[in-house]
Each structure stands twice: as C-alpha cells, then as structure tokens.
Amino acid sequence: MSLRPLLMWLALMLGVPALAESVQTLGADCEGCPEMVALPAGQFVMGAEGGEEGRPEGPLHKVRVKRAFALAAHEVTQAQYAAFIKETAHISGTNCRSWDPEAKTVQNRPGYDWKKPAPGVVPRASDPVGCVSWLDAKAYTAWLSDKTGKPYRLPSEAEWEYAARAGNNSAYYWGDDPDAACAHANLYDLDALQETISWAHVKCHDGFAGVAPVGSFPANGFGLHDMTGNVWEWAEDCYVAPFAADVPMDGSAYQVPGQCARRAVRGGAWITLADRNRVAWRGRDAEDFVSWIFGFRVARDLAPEEALR
Image (cartoon, rainbow, N blue to C red; front, side, top):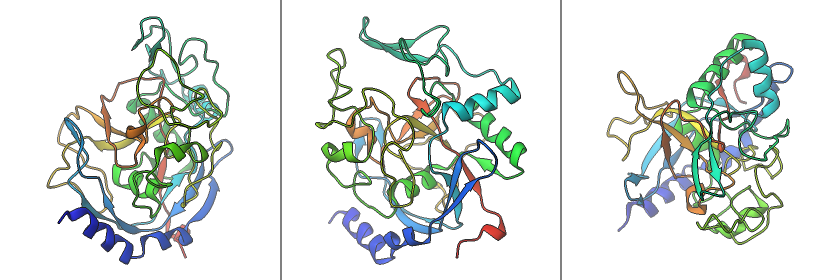
C-alpha cells in the first residue's frame, strides 16, 4: 500500500483545513511595504511521490510548522522593488534570461534587468518584479527589516508549501485539474500560447498573455494570491533532492555548511509547464541566477503581541 494515502488521511484527521479560520490580516508595516497575513502554526504532509528525472519531490514527510508566521499576501511588486532600489542604490542582477522568439530558446540578454525584463515588455507598477536573483531578494528583506524594525526574511520551502496548500492536499491548491487553473492563477494558457513555445499549456483562458498584476486572481484558503503561477518565488533553503534525512521537520529552512550551490524556488510562473506549477514541484537555481520569470514574496516572524487568537 502506498504511504501517500495514509499520510494524507492523517493530515486531514489533524484538522489542517480548519487552520484557515485562524488567519489574520496584518496589513503593511510601512507605506509601500508588502501587505502581510499571519498564518497559524500547523502540520501537513510535504512533497509528492515521484517527480521529474533528477528532480524528485519526495520522500513524503510530515512537517509541523511550530510557530505562526507572516507571509506577504502578494509577490513583491515592481513599485515596491523600485522603492528599495531608490533608497539603497542596490545593484540588482542584470543580463536577465528571457525567451527569444527568433532563436526559440531562453538565453541571457545583456542589459536586461528588473526594469526591462524581456523584449517589448514594459512592466506595470503592480506587476510582480522579475529578473531578481536570490541575492537580490535577500537584500530586499534586509532593507525591509532595517526600515520597519521587524524580522523580514524569505520563507522556507516548508513554510511556502504549507502556505500554498492552505490545508489542501491536491496537486494544485484548487484541486487536481490543471485545466481549471484560469479561475485561480496565471499559468501558461491559451491566452499566452505561442507557436514557438511547444510545451504543455492549460486549456483555458485567464485573460493574460504574460505576467498579471498581483492580486488579479482569487486568494487561496489562507488569503494569499498568486502562490501558483505569475512568477517563481525564491525560498530560503539550500536545495537538496531527494529531501535529506536531516531536513527540518519544524518548518525551518534546510541549510548546508559553507557555500550553497543552488537555492530552492517554488510556485511556477505564467509561462511554466503546467505540471511544474503543482504545489509540490521544486525548482532550484544558483543564488545569482536572474530570470524574467523569477521573483519572490517575503515572510517575517511574528512579535508576541501579534500572536494569533
């Protein structure tokens, strides 16, 4: 008998879906800061059986997120990232990788960055920022911590998956049918379909041929928007696959001594293979990797007075 059904049954018996009732909206910690949502402690079954060759998503393991934490309701936007750049003069990653329709491939593009993520693309202030590396995302969270006096950071992989699932144990947070995505998220669909990109798309229309302004789609059960699709989101963890025997079971990030070769990235993007938008799918790239479909959302620890009731 497969272990997955048993673990899923245990998760349901532990009342994970009911946790959504404990979610609290915190608002923004400063003008122009991300809107934060406080999520309760809880437990869930992380990962999935199988996965792509060389990219296993298991083994399945139960994680207990011991402490409530805050996660941004939306991905960091162009406007929010611009404020960070203006105040810090941070030198953000460049030579951003994007799709070249003539070469029919993704390649580095000299001079392209978060302000100019891809040919012909003029980002809106409310679009999620792209072309940011893990290092850029970490610099943003450090700035936000200094600005607000609160401990901002990137979410761990476990926190991210826990938040994305919001008590749902299906492949996607809305269910198991990828073709139902357009009512919930911005995936590679019939509106975005291009003849030069041959990979699988979802068979519906979401109204966007590219990236969508944050919050364009309904929130999941925890009040979080765009956990699937739009842009990939960097996580804190050093990537290891399959999950290591010593991977934290308390929701914290997995780290290694010394230099980390690749950081975890989650959630897929508007132009990603549909299967890679599943909540259990795990991406991984170098800390300085810059792509037009890579962004992030922030997390932070909660102060005692913000304890969930």
